[in-house]
Image 1: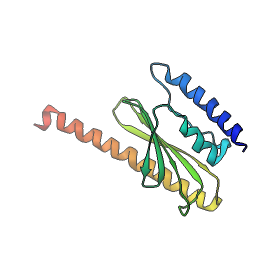
Image 2 (image 1 turned 45 degrees about the horizontal axis):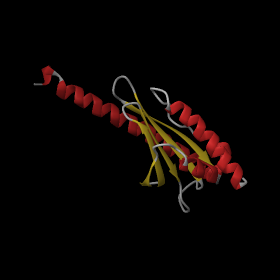
Image 3 (image 1 turned 180 degrees about the vertical axis):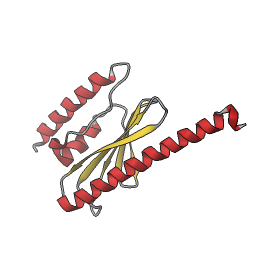
Image 4 (image 1 turned 90 degrees about the horizontal axis):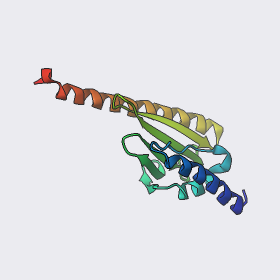
Length: 148
């Protein structure tokens, strides 16, 4: 993709996100796999409020609306399974207080590795959601007057 086109795509994506973030309850960003691995790298450079760091699975960008949602965007690095790939893991806070994890993955490498990688991502989503659910239940038990 031509560099000027990539920047244009990033600005369009940013404009959409900014319009949403101006509302009282901004919506979390989403991946557009059609812009490619490098295009998504550039798109994240324009995300308002994005914090950059290194996660266990590569370069991670975090964006959030406290008490509503959190998004972690992770880019695989050379040598990792299914590279190049991008994972957007969205944590949504439910009315019950449970944070549910939902992921979208864009894969640009080996299709067989991608299928296994995707299965691992979905398994981790389930684990994270169940851990949040267990924590909420533990807090409810401790707060209950019957537990005293």
